[in-house]
Image (cartoon, rainbow, N blue to C red; front, top):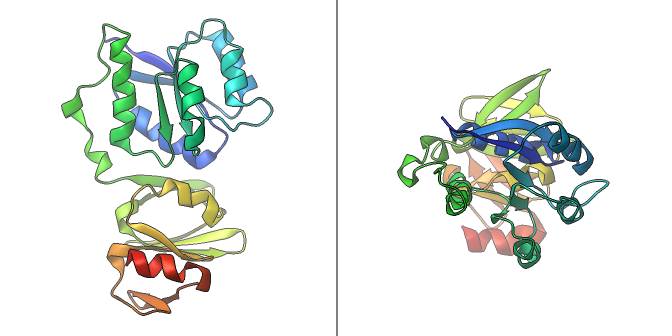
Length: 234
């Protein structure tokens, strides 16, 4: 079976984990390396034959577009970015697609299938969308191991200094992250930030007022600066 060798060039660990999980769901993709910067990616391209690059734009040392411009014969490139405004510039560089974070698995597959326009070998059939899209998950570092949390089980996430406390239906974990780190990974519109210290799952709300929401036995305050947005969303 033909496999497309690929690398992920991404300096955000959670974004890299999501892309890694997505690549593993596609049988015809073979992940060679996850590179935290463009210099490491350049070394990998020198050492191995790479067919596809998942490239973030805002990288340390050398930015994504600078890296792309330095490649004489670049492989297929799919941009993965939190910023929409660079899309036109990206397509001027002849990239295959431009994915805006947080990236849905179905959208990821659409990008991969565009490779078939330039290749005789289809990467994945449209009907083969994995059921993992229905049950998305993330891995978090907890006590020197990675713990899987299904997004549809999360009740709420609380920020406590340099850590976040993730409370789900089946477990509670504490991991060293900031809310701003995990927020882009919650691609489901079910999640909403209601306070500088809390992100909650809307479908887990039992009741709410103008000042707080109730999830399980927990009363969670609505921050003053978030009030208008939250009440509109609920």
